[in-house]
Length: 373
Ligand code: KG4
Ligand code: ZN
View 1 (cartoon, rainbow, N blue to C red):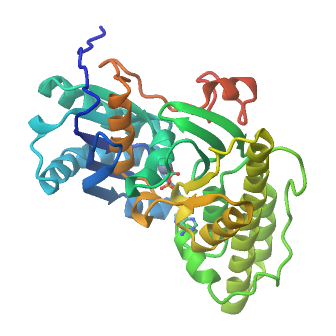
View 2 (view 1 turned 180 degrees about the horizontal axis):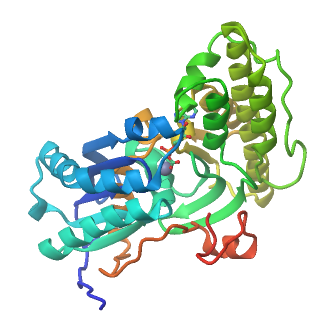
């Protein structure tokens, strides 16, 4: 049965929206206020990491994740509303991640949001997690549309032209692993706990990035796709024979530099494609997703943006990794655009931002459930 409320959102209203995020190993909720002029204010953001429960397994275990979301979602949402000093009745809408991600976890957050929307008589917004990352720099008042987005997380590595809410065009994507996956696997080979990105960044400090030569995948190749599996395998093999802490530091520095170099090189190509089209509006580069927390990567992209005459924005560190605030903001922007979902909206394990591009050129074998990203 499809239940749909008819909510019209006046364009001059300030909207207060709850965002719920449960697509991976963080149970998160936040309340965001969006002004009529498009300015966002985060009233609260609560994130509970399940990492301790997954760490013994070296990665996220879907069943453990889903169960942990069930156990904590109510308290996390209540905490976000209390911290924002916002009774649920005051909300203008309830947004939740509806995919892509681990479907058991996505179902928990989405079902919770549906129940709230139904009980409160408020509109539901089913948000694409990647769209949440895409708008995350806007939480800090940066990144006016349109912008070129490098989305780098544990599960995704894509270059997208973001023209507005719900309007993305994919320029490139990884043909194998995501950048965060490379950090996690190489870090794991160096004995760092999952997720290894932040620890690898710390280990790389003071290391010599020139000491080990690592493969430079796709260097000079046309297009904006990425590939990290060769680099990951080569670095993991070298890691096996290392004995000293200095060796480990050097390899961490080399791997981080190689990832940063590839991200910058492919992003430069996407920028050139813009320049060729001669669209003076497209002079903004945004990096988002967990890997955007990495200082060396931010620096490499900032340098590149300066060289190419682009502005550069990245979300505050707290909004790089998964959080509810980015889902609340995407939900609020969707509400303004009248993009409201039915209460029978489905949880989607796979859900590309640019569905046309994913159908035309799937980067992963689509399988029965459709293109992944
Ligand atoms: O966006 P996110 O929280 O989850 C996904 O949607 O995938 O990203 C998590 C990923 C992990 O692979 C983690 O190792 C990586 O982001 N990460 C980092 C850093 N902080 C998080 N990678 C490199 N340097 C960091 N400082
Ligand atoms: Zn994410």
